[in-house]
Length: 181
Image (cartoon, rainbow, N blue to C red; front, side, top):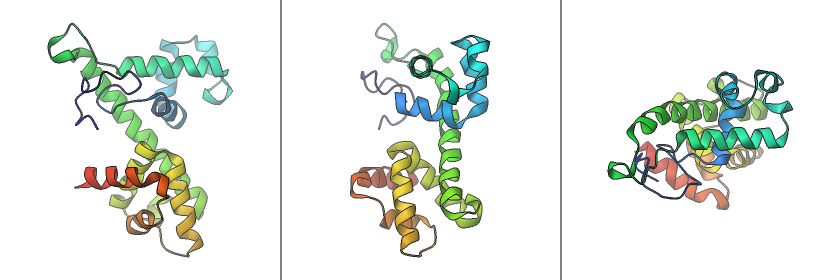
């Protein structure tokens, strides 16, 4: 990762402190409704935003994702160290909203699969690790692991989720373990 340095990579597919991507922007807009309602009118009309994220045309969703990625992009070729510090500071809020969105989505995944609120099926620390799986690897990694451990009739703990992480998500497992240290 970037070690939280927003100008670490010149790859505009991943920008800002949290290396926001279009998929990450979609997660924020979809799973953080308060953020969506605040951000959307800065890009689209109030009328367009009023229909909600799920009813927007694909072109408008793409426009919102692009605008959000752009808002988090602090890379500046003419700035000292290649970073616009004002934009970097503004991107901190976007990164925190992204963590909140991933936490919400991870909680919904657990609730949908177990029939219980996430806080009743796992510990606070383990839920944050699962949030990081969702952030880094996507909902598919977390969903697959939880479904597999449920089929094995095991509790939802980080140890069990990690043990059932799909092969295609092993890099995410390393990422979470590195962050959690």
